[in-house]
Image (tube, rainbow, N blue to C red):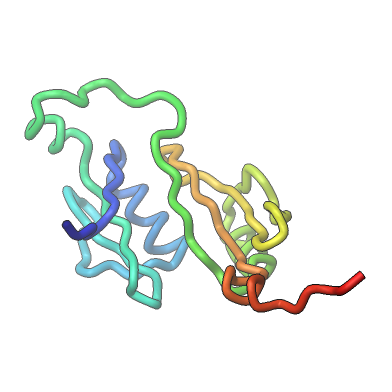
Length: 140
C-alpha cells in the first residue's frame, strides 16, 4: 500500500485553490482554478495536498451533501523560519488563529485556517529527533 495524497473536500473550489496557490505559495501540478480537482506541492515536492470539489464527490458517493461542521482536517506544513513565514502571510492578509509559539521543546507552531475552515499548522523544527538523541547529557 502506498499513500499518494491527502485530499480535502471543498465547497468553494476556486477560493481554496487560490489560497493554497497564491497565499501559501504551493505549486499546482497543473492549473485548475475552477476544479474539480487539483494537486499542489511545496517547493520540496515530497508531499502534496489535493483539492476535490465536494459536490462532484457527493455525486460519486451519493452522499456528502451536508456541509461539515467543525475542523475536518489538519494540514501540517514544515517551514525553516516560522517568524518569517508568519510575517509574510500576515502581509498577505492571513489572520492567524494562533501566532508562533512553542509546542513542546522540539517545535514551534502557528495556526491558520483556509477559506473552508480547514486548520493549517505551520511547524518550525527546533531539533530533530536524531539530534536530540545524539546530544550529550550532563553528568551531575
